[in-house]
Figure 1: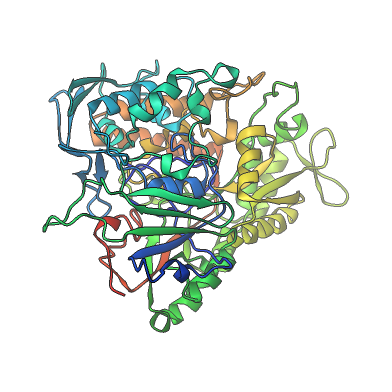
Figure 2: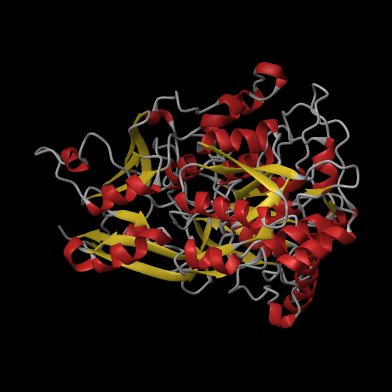
Length: 598
């Protein structure tokens, strides 16, 4: 099961693990083919990432580059096959669920080892859950997804023997197997001391463990690859894990691809140049590049895959946080905060944005209007045909809604509030994706037509994350979240009140300074309650009812104003055999069995 791990919208370089990953490509002064020296002609995959990783600690990773790299380093116990959506064994050999659904027993494959050669056992599973994911001093979105009732209880885990563990509950929890099976297991022998030792501020030393200044060869995992080297602003290189568990039918070790080269580049335009020049093997195709690349498929020896609507989300969101930080500063100007916290204001903005024009211009027609946070192919998706409220382009309706909410127009036909304050705000976006900047430009024009002045702030991805997650002093942003797949429960860290990615009204997280005056609204509490009820309902029809109701509330309150969902498109060199493309899995979910035919 894939979790919503990253805060802003990212595309994923998908693999069968719990981390959300990305596929993109890069230009550097060195041609990647130079890595194939005469002494080392090995099969390799060259991709790129949108900047430097911020950490090699998988638990603390919240940026795209880190998620890409770390995704190669860890396997889950159980994977969800993106072609069938069925669960299949990975590190686990087998599992069984008790008739009442309150217990799950999982057995590891025999002989598993960490990348340093040490045995992987049930102790590592117990350690990962009890001392990392459920540790109140460690900020991780996994904790949010594991809470199964109003009290915030989480599954208990106990060791049965060296290969078996049991997870137990006191109340039903429908996503239990997908959750405990899909979360990466971490090495007890390498991390326990850092968990139990206090660092700066009395927090676990673990919070500063495995940063990007760590020797890459010291990072221990259980996935198909291990870190080999990292050169800041240039590349990360991974090599095949010699202790990886997979073997093919003939007993030959997998994966067949021996090396992954992650080049660092910070714009999709340069990624495309590099891909077209033949230096890179995979490219997440932006809408503006589709027509050109489609024409070049045969000459460039690649294929463009189109998986249909992506599993993630794209939106504009307002900062509804009324709190002050530890310095006594308002996170949001109180005047603006009053506007943002009126649902009518958010609804008016939704009516004013011409999303169909955005789909045609910014997305070149390669997308669909989005209405809900739930993936359109999920059985839990509430469609407009079944009653979900939508906001079709209607600027007159937008103005009418604003006037009813107490706003007015001055003699220059600019919007002002009841106290005469001109209405305007700054919208934040990141520099790496051209389509986001195109979207921001249109939103500025659309809202200007109803008298609202919007400024744009474009930041690098890491600075964008810093502003959203750390200072929290922003008005509105264009962003999104990576897809969580079929089950809406994977977005618990976004929709639960105390979730680590409750973006629009984020409370203080473990290790953060306190926020003064933070409070959730009544509708946030109602969604929180519905998420609990849906998780505890074992009957799928009951779960649908709860998730439908949550979507109705979200569509009324609009903490996220949905925009356009692009089609999931990637270009992959034809020398890679065995691609089984799907929007849920991408091009490389079965990386272990792909072969290079150079």
